[in-house]
Length: 211
Image 1 (cartoon, rainbow, N blue to C red):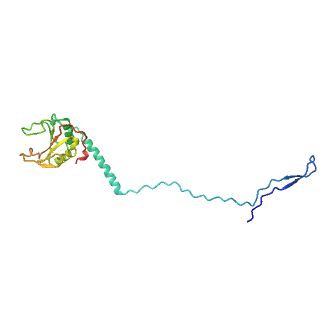
Image 2 (tube, one colour; image 1 turned 135 degrees about the vertical axis):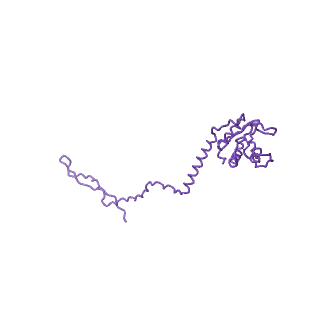
Image 3 (cartoon, rainbow, N blue to C red; image 1 turned 90 degrees about the horizontal axis):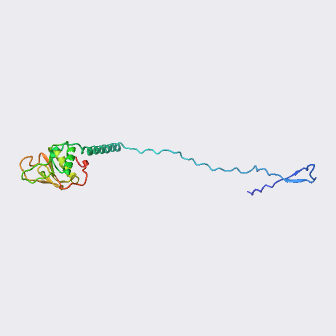
């Protein structure tokens, strides 16, 4: 297609006024805008997606049950830790060492406050009771198993030296049989004996380690 020629201003003749000279005056007329100009093209606008909120993740019933179980277990641990610091009756201990008293309170509160014995003479036999480094917790089989296990699980934190229970002794590395001393009490069938270290431990026992 041939290129369009630029518009040339037309010359318009004006009649002279009465006072103007008689010569004709030529004045350029303002060109009119072209009527055959091509229309402007406007690019189409792409649709803008609306702001949609993301869909929440789907939760399985098993996940909800598991989460509820974990929350309940955590609550039970908190309650058990709080229960380990009850106002247990420790009068039967006598003048035991402070960490022995603390250990006796911890175990007594967790296991329904069994009868406790602390400072006492034991005849000619070697014992940690006269020096205030031992405690006896009077109990039966099922509760005694749990008390002994709890004391050993917190051995370092409580400052436990060894545990005697049902004619066996445990220094922290497993149960060993003991010789027969005679009756149920002498063989520790009716109480858990716990001997403590000579110095105070550095740590806090955890009820979460106990059954």
